[in-house]
Amino acid sequence: MRRKDLYLFNYYIMHLKEKLVSSFLFLSAFFSVIIIFLIIIFILREGMPIFLKEGLSFIFGREWKPEGEIYGFDASYGALPLILATLLTTFMAIAIAVPLGIGSAIFISHLAPKRIKSFIKSMIELLAGIPSVVYGFFGMIVLVNFFQASFNVASGEGWLVASIVLAIMILPTITSISEDVISSVPYEYIEGSFALGATKWRTIRKIVLPASLPGIIASIVLGIGRAAGETMAVMMVIGNSPLMPNLKMPFMPLKTITSAMAIEMGESPTNSMWHHALYGLAVLLLIIAFFVNWFAMKIIERSKKARVNEKLKKYAKIFFSIILFFLTIYIFEIYSIAIFGIFLLLYFIMKREIISERISQKIAFSLISLCAFISISVLFIILYYIFSNGISGLTIEFLTKPPSNLGREGGIFPAIVGTLLLVGGAILFAMPLGIGAGIYLNEYAREGKIKKIILSSITMLNGTPSIVFGLFGLTFFVIYLKWGICLLAGQITLALMILPTIIKTTQETLKTIPKHVREGSFALGATKWQTIKKIVLPASLPGIMTGAILSIGRAAGETAPILFTAAVFSQRFLPGSVFEPVMALPYHLFIIITSVPGEEARGNAFATAVVLTLLVIVLYMGAIIIRNRYRKKIRW
Image (cartoon, rainbow, N blue to C red; front, side):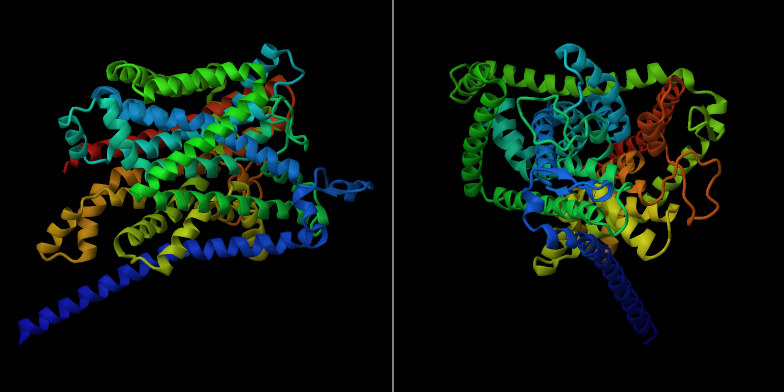
């Protein structure tokens, strides 16, 4: 009887433990539903007055002059120029980054020698670690001046430079996740293709890429979310004039939705119609993000069905070919016919097998290698320029003293500590919830309405622009909860922003663990949680670390979420509690670049950019080393 009672007691304890774990994992996943609901409620509450007053003219109006309400002339709240500028820069950035990203991913997974494979991927991932404000700084100093001198224009600012900067920023996201997905395709598929006589390029094109399509689309969706929501880098290079976009004028200054919100939020009085109009822009951003992510989810669902996938690819090729044709005619006019004709000729030559398979493979592999070379070159160009101009400014005093004279003198010690506190708190808050949600969705959740609601919420949360997170943090934490501008508000706001990245990468990594591994553990008497804890999670650590890497880089480099919640400029003391404001390196750098004149300020800006970049690179390199060590240990 004692043995039986002990057995029953252990059984009930184990059963209770399983219930508690599954409940915690469910709450972790459902947390995303709660957050997106709160974001919608608070943003919509502040933005609704402008829709009630202006109606559809707020969306389709062609003139944006909300400051008239304050300065005594007729105010105009037409957001169409801002909407079109946002869509234009995002579309152009995706058009540049997707070919480079997927080409680099194929090169890393199938063409790169083993000795340099991990090195190349690590270098591309470091692009994600470069903060957005550093990209904006590079765009202001290098790209804007280059285009101004090369094309003899009054200013190199405009949507072209903004699109290039955005493309560089989202490139590592697309490359890293696509490479993980492409590498997870079972090698048996590849061997079977080789056994049938297919070349390496045909195998990649016909077997590997179709099998990886859902994951590749997921990486593109993450890239779209990052591009549409970027604020500071775009604001620094686009010119910030609310004009209607003209594709024939790439150096035309525009203003996106995010840059308008960041610039004008501090100028608009609380409860004014201008203030409500800026929240109305946040509502429009959420709507755009919702439709983009909904469309992407539909593509992912259909891509899992072979027949529908073939039709989808056929219609997609026709659709994008028509867009490309008219777009090139509009921009390049008569020269577009020759440009489009060359690409069309190359496509038919490779598609119709007019040339041999070997030559086609050489052409394809050359283009793929070129994509990887461009991606690596961009990293080294940015790092070389920043370090060559800023390394001389790094002194002991600069690293250990507070700033003075508006950042022209002194150091950045409070900003370094503030950045570490913000990133550390965000990661500590987001990692348990993100990993727990990813485990629940892949291991516990059954197909049904609840899972669809959670997945839709995560997708919407991922597509929510960073500036909207900042407005939500301002509205909810700073004002509604009466925390004020403080460290804790910034930490939680950043955590909410990086949460969907951790969830998605965790879920996608767990899917790659073979089913027979779990079945073998169950056969030995292990419970579901024991199997996950002892078998599945250790094997999934490399992919989970990829999510952590992307999250660390984004949290450390973001300025928009802490702009309204945590950051102050030129503070000479460290926070004494989590309810005090902090300095942060990206915000400090942004203010010095855009608001403090003088050569001393520019020199300190370069030195601050070096410190911020080094800080994130060190964090990245540590995570990459840990991931690579686990990857060497784990073999199926």
